[in-house]
Length: 441
Image 1: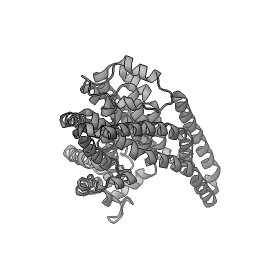
Image 2 (image 1 turned 120 degrees about the horizontal axis):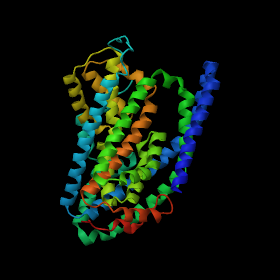
Image 3 (image 1 turned 90 degrees about the horizontal axis):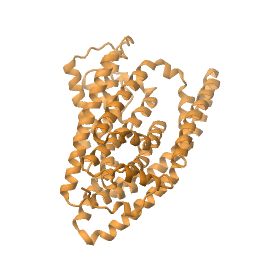
Image 4 (image 1 turned 30 degrees about the horizontal axis):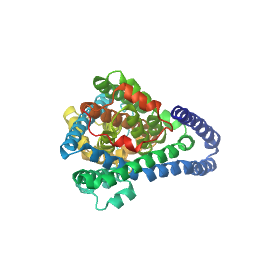
Protein backbone atom coordinates (compact mmCIF):
# COMPACT_ATOMS: atom_id res chain seq x y z
CA UNK A 1 0.00 0.00 0.00
CA UNK A 2 2.90 2.35 0.77
CA UNK A 3 4.34 2.13 -2.75
CA UNK A 4 0.91 2.47 -4.33
CA UNK A 5 0.23 5.61 -2.29
CA UNK A 6 3.52 7.11 -3.48
CA UNK A 7 2.62 6.53 -7.12
CA UNK A 8 -0.89 7.88 -6.60
CA UNK A 9 0.55 11.06 -5.07
CA UNK A 10 2.97 11.46 -7.99
CA UNK A 11 0.08 10.93 -10.41
CA UNK A 12 -1.99 13.55 -8.59
CA UNK A 13 0.91 15.99 -8.70
CA UNK A 14 1.42 15.59 -12.46
CA UNK A 15 -2.26 15.48 -13.46
CA UNK A 16 -3.04 18.45 -11.23
CA UNK A 17 -0.25 20.41 -12.89
CA UNK A 18 -1.58 19.58 -16.35
CA UNK A 19 -5.13 20.53 -15.42
CA UNK A 20 -4.06 23.81 -13.80
CA UNK A 21 -1.89 24.74 -16.77
CA UNK A 22 -4.72 23.89 -19.18
CA UNK A 23 -7.27 25.96 -17.26
CA UNK A 24 -4.93 28.94 -17.09
CA UNK A 25 -4.10 28.69 -20.78
CA UNK A 26 -7.78 28.57 -21.72
CA UNK A 27 -9.24 31.25 -19.42
CA UNK A 28 -6.39 33.73 -18.82
CA UNK A 29 -6.59 35.31 -22.33
CA UNK A 30 -10.27 36.15 -21.72
CA UNK A 31 -9.35 39.09 -19.49
CA UNK A 32 -11.44 39.94 -16.45
CA UNK A 33 -14.15 37.40 -17.30
CA UNK A 34 -11.53 34.66 -17.52
CA UNK A 35 -9.89 35.75 -14.28
CA UNK A 36 -13.26 35.65 -12.51
CA UNK A 37 -13.92 32.20 -13.92
CA UNK A 38 -10.51 30.95 -12.77
CA UNK A 39 -11.17 32.34 -9.29
CA UNK A 40 -14.47 30.44 -9.14
CA UNK A 41 -12.84 27.19 -10.31
CA UNK A 42 -9.99 27.68 -7.84
CA UNK A 43 -12.53 28.02 -5.05
CA UNK A 44 -14.01 24.63 -5.88
CA UNK A 45 -10.58 23.02 -6.24
CA UNK A 46 -9.61 24.35 -2.84
CA UNK A 47 -12.40 22.44 -1.08
CA UNK A 48 -10.81 18.94 -1.17
CA UNK A 49 -7.41 20.36 -0.24
CA UNK A 50 -8.77 22.20 2.78
CA UNK A 51 -10.79 19.15 3.83
CA UNK A 52 -7.63 17.03 3.76
CA UNK A 53 -5.65 19.60 5.75
CA UNK A 54 -8.49 19.76 8.28
CA UNK A 55 -8.36 15.98 8.59
CA UNK A 56 -4.63 16.23 9.27
CA UNK A 57 -5.18 18.93 11.88
CA UNK A 58 -7.87 16.73 13.43
CA UNK A 59 -5.35 13.99 14.24
CA UNK A 60 -2.23 16.09 15.00
CA UNK A 61 -2.98 17.01 18.64
CA UNK A 62 -3.94 13.52 19.93
CA UNK A 63 -1.10 11.96 17.91
CA UNK A 64 1.58 14.36 19.17
CA UNK A 65 0.43 14.27 22.80
CA UNK A 66 -0.01 10.49 23.00
CA UNK A 67 3.26 9.58 21.26
CA UNK A 68 5.30 12.21 23.08
CA UNK A 69 3.90 11.42 26.57
CA UNK A 70 4.40 7.67 26.08
CA UNK A 71 7.90 8.22 24.74
CA UNK A 72 8.89 10.39 27.69
CA UNK A 73 7.30 7.99 30.19
CA UNK A 74 9.36 5.10 28.80
CA UNK A 75 12.62 7.07 28.83
CA UNK A 76 12.74 6.64 32.58
CA UNK A 77 14.22 9.39 34.74
CA UNK A 78 14.69 13.03 34.03
CA UNK A 79 18.38 12.46 33.27
CA UNK A 80 17.53 10.44 30.14
CA UNK A 81 15.08 13.10 28.98
CA UNK A 82 17.63 15.85 29.60
CA UNK A 83 20.33 13.91 27.76
CA UNK A 84 18.18 13.31 24.67
CA UNK A 85 16.91 16.89 24.77
CA UNK A 86 20.44 18.29 24.97
CA UNK A 87 21.63 16.19 22.04
CA UNK A 88 18.60 17.23 19.98
CA UNK A 89 19.18 20.89 20.85
CA UNK A 90 22.86 20.70 19.86
CA UNK A 91 21.92 19.16 16.53
CA UNK A 92 19.22 21.79 15.92
CA UNK A 93 21.66 24.64 16.58
CA UNK A 94 24.31 23.17 14.26
CA UNK A 95 21.77 22.42 11.52
CA UNK A 96 20.31 25.92 11.82
CA UNK A 97 23.72 27.55 11.47
CA UNK A 98 24.55 25.37 8.47
CA UNK A 99 21.22 26.15 6.77
CA UNK A 100 21.47 29.90 7.31
CA UNK A 101 25.13 29.99 6.29
CA UNK A 102 24.52 28.02 3.10
CA UNK A 103 21.75 30.43 2.13
CA UNK A 104 24.07 33.37 2.83
CA UNK A 105 26.93 31.93 0.77
CA UNK A 106 24.89 30.75 -2.21
CA UNK A 107 22.92 33.97 -2.64
CA UNK A 108 26.24 35.82 -2.75
CA UNK A 109 27.74 33.35 -5.23
CA UNK A 110 24.72 33.16 -7.57
CA UNK A 111 23.53 36.80 -7.21
CA UNK A 112 19.91 36.07 -8.28
CA UNK A 113 18.78 39.64 -7.54
CA UNK A 114 21.63 41.49 -9.22
CA UNK A 115 20.55 43.25 -12.39
CA UNK A 116 16.88 43.67 -11.48
CA UNK A 117 17.61 47.30 -10.53
CA UNK A 118 14.26 47.90 -8.84
CA UNK A 119 13.57 51.53 -7.91
CA UNK A 120 13.47 52.20 -4.19
CA UNK A 121 9.81 52.45 -3.12
CA UNK A 122 8.25 55.26 -1.15
CA UNK A 123 9.26 55.11 2.50
CA UNK A 124 5.64 54.59 3.49
CA UNK A 125 5.23 51.56 1.26
CA UNK A 126 4.78 48.37 3.21
CA UNK A 127 5.02 44.71 2.38
CA UNK A 128 1.43 43.77 3.12
CA UNK A 129 2.71 41.17 5.60
CA UNK A 130 1.81 41.71 9.23
CA UNK A 131 5.10 41.38 11.08
CA UNK A 132 3.50 42.39 14.37
CA UNK A 133 2.50 38.71 14.63
CA UNK A 134 6.03 37.85 15.72
CA UNK A 135 7.79 39.23 18.75
CA UNK A 136 10.62 37.54 20.63
CA UNK A 137 9.25 38.39 24.09
CA UNK A 138 5.74 37.28 23.17
CA UNK A 139 7.18 34.06 21.73
CA UNK A 140 8.86 33.03 24.99
CA UNK A 141 5.69 33.79 26.94
CA UNK A 142 3.58 31.99 24.36
CA UNK A 143 5.48 28.69 24.50
CA UNK A 144 3.97 27.96 27.95
CA UNK A 145 0.31 27.03 27.47
CA UNK A 146 -2.34 28.52 29.70
CA UNK A 147 -4.57 25.56 28.87
CA UNK A 148 -3.68 22.15 27.45
CA UNK A 149 -7.14 21.96 25.91
CA UNK A 150 -6.63 25.29 24.13
CA UNK A 151 -3.24 24.15 22.82
CA UNK A 152 -4.89 21.00 21.44
CA UNK A 153 -7.73 23.00 19.93
CA UNK A 154 -5.35 25.33 18.08
CA UNK A 155 -2.79 22.61 17.22
CA UNK A 156 0.00 24.70 18.71
CA UNK A 157 2.82 22.15 18.41
CA UNK A 158 5.25 23.97 20.68
CA UNK A 159 2.71 24.33 23.49
CA UNK A 160 1.74 20.68 23.06
CA UNK A 161 5.40 19.72 23.44
CA UNK A 162 5.71 21.72 26.69
CA UNK A 163 2.52 20.20 28.14
CA UNK A 164 3.49 16.67 27.06
CA UNK A 165 6.96 17.12 28.54
CA UNK A 166 5.56 17.97 31.98
CA UNK A 167 2.85 15.31 31.76
CA UNK A 168 5.26 12.60 30.62
CA UNK A 169 7.82 13.39 33.33
CA UNK A 170 5.06 13.34 35.93
CA UNK A 171 3.76 10.04 34.60
CA UNK A 172 7.23 8.49 34.82
CA UNK A 173 7.67 9.86 38.36
CA UNK A 174 4.55 8.18 39.79
CA UNK A 175 5.79 4.79 38.58
CA UNK A 176 3.37 1.87 38.83
CA UNK A 177 0.42 4.12 39.67
CA UNK A 178 0.63 5.62 36.20
CA UNK A 179 0.96 2.27 34.37
CA UNK A 180 -2.77 2.03 33.46
CA UNK A 181 -2.67 5.51 31.99
CA UNK A 182 0.47 4.65 29.99
CA UNK A 183 -1.23 1.55 28.58
CA UNK A 184 -4.28 3.64 27.69
CA UNK A 185 -2.12 6.17 25.86
CA UNK A 186 -0.33 3.34 24.04
CA UNK A 187 -3.71 2.15 22.82
CA UNK A 188 -4.52 5.71 21.75
CA UNK A 189 -1.27 5.82 19.75
CA UNK A 190 -2.23 2.62 17.92
CA UNK A 191 -5.71 3.97 17.16
CA UNK A 192 -4.44 7.36 15.95
CA UNK A 193 -1.83 5.82 13.65
CA UNK A 194 -4.51 3.59 12.16
CA UNK A 195 -6.77 6.62 11.67
CA UNK A 196 -3.81 8.35 10.03
CA UNK A 197 -3.67 5.51 7.51
CA UNK A 198 -7.30 6.18 6.61
CA UNK A 199 -6.72 9.93 6.29
CA UNK A 200 -3.75 9.39 3.96
CA UNK A 201 -6.02 7.69 1.44
CA UNK A 202 -7.32 11.17 0.59
CA UNK A 203 -3.82 12.57 -0.01
CA UNK A 204 -3.66 12.01 -3.83
CA UNK A 205 -6.95 13.88 -4.35
CA UNK A 206 -5.79 16.75 -2.13
CA UNK A 207 -2.47 16.96 -3.99
CA UNK A 208 -4.22 16.94 -7.36
CA UNK A 209 -6.53 19.80 -6.37
CA UNK A 210 -3.83 21.86 -4.63
CA UNK A 211 -1.47 21.81 -7.61
CA UNK A 212 -4.28 22.40 -10.13
CA UNK A 213 -5.54 25.39 -8.13
CA UNK A 214 -2.10 26.99 -7.83
CA UNK A 215 -1.21 26.71 -11.53
CA UNK A 216 -4.71 27.69 -12.65
CA UNK A 217 -4.55 31.00 -10.79
CA UNK A 218 -0.80 31.74 -11.08
CA UNK A 219 0.02 30.21 -14.46
CA UNK A 220 3.46 29.21 -15.66
CA UNK A 221 4.31 32.83 -16.48
CA UNK A 222 4.79 33.83 -12.85
CA UNK A 223 7.40 31.08 -12.54
CA UNK A 224 9.23 32.34 -15.62
CA UNK A 225 9.44 35.89 -14.31
CA UNK A 226 11.49 34.80 -11.28
CA UNK A 227 12.88 31.57 -12.72
CA UNK A 228 16.50 32.39 -11.89
CA UNK A 229 15.64 33.24 -8.29
CA UNK A 230 13.62 30.03 -7.91
CA UNK A 231 16.26 27.94 -9.64
CA UNK A 232 18.99 29.40 -7.46
CA UNK A 233 17.03 28.63 -4.31
CA UNK A 234 16.37 25.05 -5.39
CA UNK A 235 20.08 24.64 -6.10
CA UNK A 236 20.62 25.80 -2.52
CA UNK A 237 18.11 23.23 -1.25
CA UNK A 238 19.91 20.51 -3.23
CA UNK A 239 23.19 21.50 -1.56
CA UNK A 240 21.49 21.50 1.85
CA UNK A 241 20.05 18.03 1.21
CA UNK A 242 23.54 16.84 0.32
CA UNK A 243 24.98 18.26 3.54
CA UNK A 244 22.19 16.83 5.74
CA UNK A 245 22.29 13.39 4.16
CA UNK A 246 26.10 13.46 4.20
CA UNK A 247 26.03 14.14 7.94
CA UNK A 248 23.49 11.33 8.31
CA UNK A 249 25.83 9.01 6.37
CA UNK A 250 28.60 9.70 8.88
CA UNK A 251 26.34 8.31 11.62
CA UNK A 252 24.53 5.40 9.93
CA UNK A 253 26.50 4.70 6.75
CA UNK A 254 24.74 2.97 3.86
CA UNK A 255 21.43 2.90 5.70
CA UNK A 256 21.03 6.53 4.63
CA UNK A 257 19.73 5.26 1.27
CA UNK A 258 17.16 3.11 3.07
CA UNK A 259 16.08 6.12 5.13
CA UNK A 260 15.44 8.15 1.97
CA UNK A 261 13.34 5.29 0.58
CA UNK A 262 11.22 5.20 3.73
CA UNK A 263 10.79 8.99 3.65
CA UNK A 264 9.54 9.25 0.06
CA UNK A 265 5.86 9.46 1.11
CA UNK A 266 6.27 12.26 3.71
CA UNK A 267 8.64 14.14 1.39
CA UNK A 268 6.11 13.99 -1.45
CA UNK A 269 3.28 15.00 0.87
CA UNK A 270 5.25 17.92 2.27
CA UNK A 271 6.30 19.05 -1.21
CA UNK A 272 2.91 18.77 -2.89
CA UNK A 273 0.82 20.25 -0.07
CA UNK A 274 3.45 22.71 1.27
CA UNK A 275 2.25 21.64 4.71
CA UNK A 276 4.55 20.28 7.41
CA UNK A 277 1.52 19.09 9.36
CA UNK A 278 0.46 16.87 6.46
CA UNK A 279 3.85 15.15 6.47
CA UNK A 280 4.16 14.71 10.25
CA UNK A 281 2.23 11.43 10.74
CA UNK A 282 3.91 9.73 7.79
CA UNK A 283 7.34 10.90 8.95
CA UNK A 284 6.70 9.46 12.41
CA UNK A 285 5.65 6.16 10.85
CA UNK A 286 8.67 6.08 8.50
CA UNK A 287 11.07 6.62 11.40
CA UNK A 288 9.38 3.87 13.40
CA UNK A 289 9.77 1.43 10.49
CA UNK A 290 13.37 2.49 9.95
CA UNK A 291 14.26 1.55 13.51
CA UNK A 292 14.14 4.80 15.48
CA UNK A 293 12.56 3.98 18.87
CA UNK A 294 9.15 5.68 19.21
CA UNK A 295 10.21 7.21 22.52
CA UNK A 296 12.97 9.12 20.70
CA UNK A 297 11.15 9.90 17.42
CA UNK A 298 8.06 11.15 19.23
CA UNK A 299 10.25 13.42 21.37
CA UNK A 300 12.68 14.81 18.77
CA UNK A 301 10.29 15.19 15.84
CA UNK A 302 7.79 17.61 17.48
CA UNK A 303 10.69 19.66 18.84
CA UNK A 304 12.16 19.75 15.34
CA UNK A 305 8.94 21.12 13.89
CA UNK A 306 9.37 24.12 16.18
CA UNK A 307 13.15 24.55 16.26
CA UNK A 308 14.67 22.79 13.24
CA UNK A 309 13.02 24.06 10.04
CA UNK A 310 16.15 23.83 7.89
CA UNK A 311 14.54 24.67 4.55
CA UNK A 312 12.71 27.68 5.98
CA UNK A 313 15.86 29.03 7.61
CA UNK A 314 17.88 28.78 4.41
CA UNK A 315 15.08 30.66 2.65
CA UNK A 316 15.27 33.51 5.15
CA UNK A 317 18.86 34.49 4.44
CA UNK A 318 18.48 33.74 0.73
CA UNK A 319 15.33 35.83 0.29
CA UNK A 320 16.48 38.71 2.51
CA UNK A 321 19.72 39.25 0.61
CA UNK A 322 18.00 38.63 -2.75
CA UNK A 323 15.68 41.57 -2.02
CA UNK A 324 18.66 43.77 -1.08
CA UNK A 325 20.36 42.79 -4.37
CA UNK A 326 17.18 43.56 -6.33
CA UNK A 327 17.16 47.13 -4.94
CA UNK A 328 20.90 47.55 -5.49
CA UNK A 329 21.59 47.79 -1.74
CA UNK A 330 25.11 46.64 -0.86
CA UNK A 331 25.52 44.69 2.37
CA UNK A 332 29.03 44.04 3.68
CA UNK A 333 29.92 40.72 5.26
CA UNK A 334 29.77 41.91 8.91
CA UNK A 335 26.22 43.17 8.26
CA UNK A 336 25.20 39.90 6.62
CA UNK A 337 26.66 37.88 9.49
CA UNK A 338 24.69 40.06 11.92
CA UNK A 339 21.59 39.35 9.84
CA UNK A 340 22.33 35.61 10.05
CA UNK A 341 22.62 35.72 13.85
CA UNK A 342 19.36 37.66 14.19
CA UNK A 343 17.59 35.13 11.96
CA UNK A 344 19.11 32.32 14.02
CA UNK A 345 17.15 33.59 17.02
CA UNK A 346 13.93 34.83 15.41
CA UNK A 347 13.50 31.71 13.25
CA UNK A 348 12.90 29.61 16.36
CA UNK A 349 9.44 31.05 16.83
CA UNK A 350 8.06 30.71 13.33
CA UNK A 351 6.25 27.38 13.56
CA UNK A 352 2.82 28.68 14.59
CA UNK A 353 2.82 31.96 12.67
CA UNK A 354 0.87 32.26 9.38
CA UNK A 355 3.25 32.90 6.45
CA UNK A 356 5.92 32.37 9.04
CA UNK A 357 9.01 32.79 6.87
CA UNK A 358 7.67 35.97 5.27
CA UNK A 359 6.83 37.43 8.68
CA UNK A 360 10.38 36.94 9.97
CA UNK A 361 11.94 38.15 6.70
CA UNK A 362 9.83 41.31 6.78
CA UNK A 363 10.98 42.14 10.31
CA UNK A 364 14.60 41.49 9.33
CA UNK A 365 14.38 43.76 6.28
CA UNK A 366 13.07 46.60 8.42
CA UNK A 367 15.92 46.15 10.91
CA UNK A 368 18.51 46.61 8.13
CA UNK A 369 16.65 49.42 6.33
CA UNK A 370 15.85 47.27 3.30
CA UNK A 371 12.45 48.14 1.76
CA UNK A 372 9.79 45.80 3.16
CA UNK A 373 7.89 46.17 -0.10
CA UNK A 374 10.48 43.80 -1.57
CA UNK A 375 8.45 40.97 -0.05
CA UNK A 376 5.87 41.61 -2.79
CA UNK A 377 8.51 40.60 -5.32
CA UNK A 378 8.66 37.02 -4.03
CA UNK A 379 5.09 36.74 -2.76
CA UNK A 380 3.76 35.53 -6.12
CA UNK A 381 6.08 32.52 -6.20
CA UNK A 382 6.24 31.89 -2.45
CA UNK A 383 3.96 28.85 -2.71
CA UNK A 384 6.30 27.12 -5.16
CA UNK A 385 9.27 27.88 -2.91
CA UNK A 386 7.32 26.77 0.16
CA UNK A 387 6.91 23.33 -1.45
CA UNK A 388 10.67 22.86 -1.60
CA UNK A 389 11.46 24.19 1.84
CA UNK A 390 8.70 22.08 3.45
CA UNK A 391 10.13 18.91 1.88
CA UNK A 392 13.54 19.98 3.18
CA UNK A 393 12.11 20.47 6.68
CA UNK A 394 10.88 16.87 6.55
CA UNK A 395 14.34 15.60 5.62
CA UNK A 396 16.03 17.75 8.28
CA UNK A 397 13.81 16.60 11.13
CA UNK A 398 13.96 12.95 10.09
CA UNK A 399 17.77 13.09 10.00
CA UNK A 400 17.80 14.78 13.42
CA UNK A 401 15.70 11.96 14.90
CA UNK A 402 17.92 9.27 13.35
CA UNK A 403 21.13 10.95 14.50
CA UNK A 404 19.89 11.36 18.09
CA UNK A 405 18.77 7.70 18.15
CA UNK A 406 22.17 6.58 16.87
CA UNK A 407 23.88 8.95 19.30
CA UNK A 408 21.95 7.26 22.11
CA UNK A 409 22.88 3.80 20.80
CA UNK A 410 19.19 2.94 20.35
CA UNK A 411 18.86 2.78 16.56
CA UNK A 412 17.62 -0.70 15.67
CA UNK A 413 19.96 -2.75 13.45
CA UNK A 414 19.10 -3.13 9.75
CA UNK A 415 17.77 -6.65 10.23
CA UNK A 416 15.25 -5.58 12.87
CA UNK A 417 14.16 -2.54 10.86
CA UNK A 418 13.68 -4.56 7.68
CA UNK A 419 11.72 -7.19 9.61
CA UNK A 420 9.47 -4.45 10.96
CA UNK A 421 8.79 -3.18 7.45
CA UNK A 422 8.06 -6.67 6.16
CA UNK A 423 5.38 -7.11 8.79
CA UNK A 424 3.65 -3.76 8.21
CA UNK A 425 0.22 -4.08 6.59
CA UNK A 426 -1.50 -1.03 6.28
CA UNK A 427 1.01 1.74 5.54
CA UNK A 428 0.46 3.45 8.89
CA UNK A 429 -0.10 1.11 11.78
CA UNK A 430 1.16 0.67 15.28
CA UNK A 431 1.23 -2.05 17.85
CA UNK A 432 0.61 -0.84 21.37
CA UNK A 433 3.47 -3.05 22.59
CA UNK A 434 5.93 -1.21 20.34
CA UNK A 435 6.08 1.55 22.91
CA UNK A 436 6.72 -0.72 25.86
CA UNK A 437 10.41 -1.38 25.36
CA UNK A 438 12.67 0.36 27.81
CA UNK A 439 15.91 2.16 27.00
CA UNK A 440 18.33 0.04 25.01
CA UNK A 441 22.08 -0.04 25.38
